[in-house]
Length: 300
Image 1 (cartoon, rainbow, N blue to C red):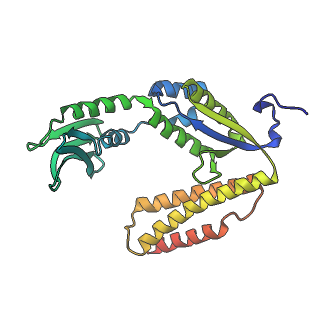
Image 2 (image 1 turned 90 degrees about the horizontal axis):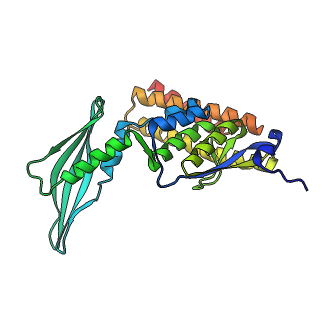
Image 3 (image 1 turned 180 degrees about the vertical axis):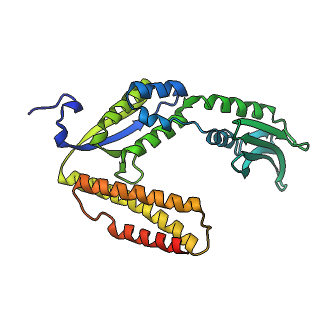
């Protein structure tokens, strides 16, 4: 029996696509510009726009780290931080840090202690400690600032996870099983997958690529996974539209634009997988229903 030595030896006409799964090292740390250069070196610079560290995402991340953070603790009293978003617009985001004090046999008390504001234009953070603050927050402010400065220029595990997810989502992935990490990627993206594997390995991480042989059974597996995945997306859109039509949510131009963009993307994916799997009328009834609801929404 002949055994192929590696995946690249398998004739492409026998392959339907690839199953992928990954694991990112907890100590991943690389400067943003260095990662962009790695993408250029691998010839997949078209995917590098995904390496975009948004100040507002990082701000929310580093401030959310302090939700339920215990700042003082004794046998009779515990004080912890509660974080909530107070304001968000085109110019700034403000989050409020409230100190919750818990004492035995007493009702909890709450002390609004700190306003933390991101200036979106300058990508800087401003801090305003309230006069009645009951704890010292200097170390927390220092930590937030240090983490923000670091993550604005450095990719860590969480950032790289988000980046790699965005990239894989551009390669027409299909989640084959609910809650499973393994995904199917069509074979036309072989070069991108191999490049991602090399990038992952350079960061001491794992990115496995397993060829999926083209059989009727595997086509049906992909069809079921794609249908379930796409039906979930359609149902989410239909639910959102029904909420608007019933008056439980507001309609805006940006929402309508998003609906049309999502529908266009779903249509494109359906046509792609109909051709790849040689199947017809995938989710045709659900797509028809969604289009009808969008028409009603536009008329209203």
